[in-house]
Image (tube, rainbow, N blue to C red; front, top):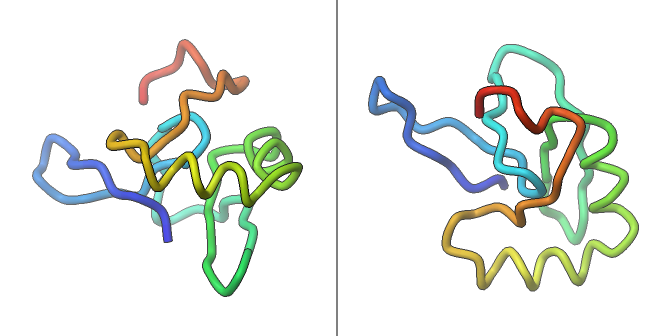
Length: 80
């Protein structure tokens, strides 16, 4: 399950756990199921980075109040 971020409309939207980019509910996103939990990503690069060390990233996410790790992905510079 991805952490959620409030949008301007007050609705919550899932975010990429690697970079924090909002995920669109109506489009397919790269996913990984790890230990029974599904993680959705904004792009293939974020998914691949997570897949290299999922245990490490999950521990980091558990201690990160923002809900994402700040990984610089190819979408950096675009609106989050």
